[in-house]
Image (cartoon, rainbow, N blue to C red; front, side, top):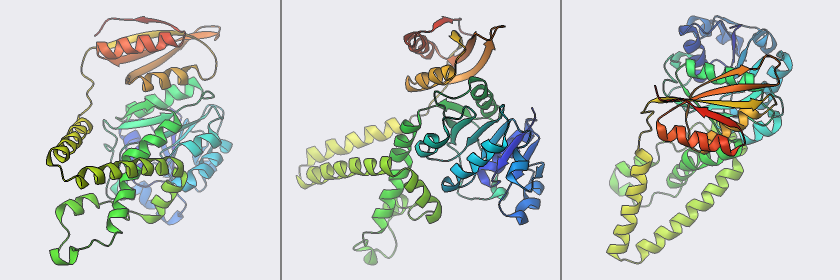
Length: 357
C-alpha cells in the first residue's frame, strides 16, 4: 500500500493511524492545523510523520481520512480531492452525511464515512489501536462511486477491525437524528426546564442524572452537527413531541391499566434496542456478474444494507477486457445469504450462491 493520510490527528484520526500502523497498513502521514502538535502526534505512534501542508500529506496516498470537525470536513475533503491522484479514495468520519455527499458525492473518489466509535475523552493522547474493533462503520457511496475505490476502502476498514455497512446518506442522517442527535436535544431540554423541586432533593436524582449526562456536550461540535443535520433532527423532534403528547394523554387518564400497558410497551421496545447483533452461522459466498459501469458496486452494497444483509467480506474480479466482472460477497448465515440472493436478483444481476463454510 502506498500509504494512508490522516487529516486531523485527534482521537478518531489518531486511532485510525495507530490501527493501520499496528497492522502493517501504513505508512501513515498526518496533517494538523496547529504545527505545535506535530511532534506529539508522531511520539504517540499515531503517524509516521506529520506533513507541513495538507497537500503534502495526501501526496502519493491511496487512502485519505478527513478527521476534522463536521463543519470543516467539506472544505478539507475538497482540498484533499484537488490535491490527490485519480486512484486515491478520500473519505471522512463525520456524523452527518447528506450535505457533504450532496457537495462531493459526484466525485468517484469521495466516499462519505462515519465510524460508530468514540470515547469520553478527546485528543491524540486518547487514541487507541483497538478503538474500532467490531464497531459499525457506515459508508455512503453514490451512483458515481468507483467500485475499485469502494472495495479498497471497505477492505481497509475491515483490516482495522471494523464492520463496513453501506447506507444512503439521507437514511444515515435520519437514523442518526433519531438514535444520537435527538437524545442530546432531549437532554438539553430536560436541564433547561428549571428542574422544579430539585432544590429540595439536595442532589440530582439518578434518573435525571442518567438522562441528562450528554446535556451541553461540546457546544462547538454539536452546533455543527445540529446545523448540518437540521432537517432530520427537527423531524425527529416532531416525532418526539407526538410521543410526549401521547404520554401526557395516557398518564393524564389516571388509568393504571392503560399506564401499565404503555410502560410495558416501552420496556419491549427497550429490550429490542438492547439486542446484540451477531454474525453467527456459516459463511456463504455470492458471486455476482455485473457490467463494468460506475455505481454498480455501490448500488448492490446499498441495496444489501437496506435489506439488512451484513457483508463480511468482498472482492472484485474484472474480466480481461474490463467490460464486465464478478463481485464476490461473503455473508454469514443462511438467512442472510437467501436475502442477499433475492435482493441482488431483484436488481437484475446474475448471482450464484456457494455452500456454507
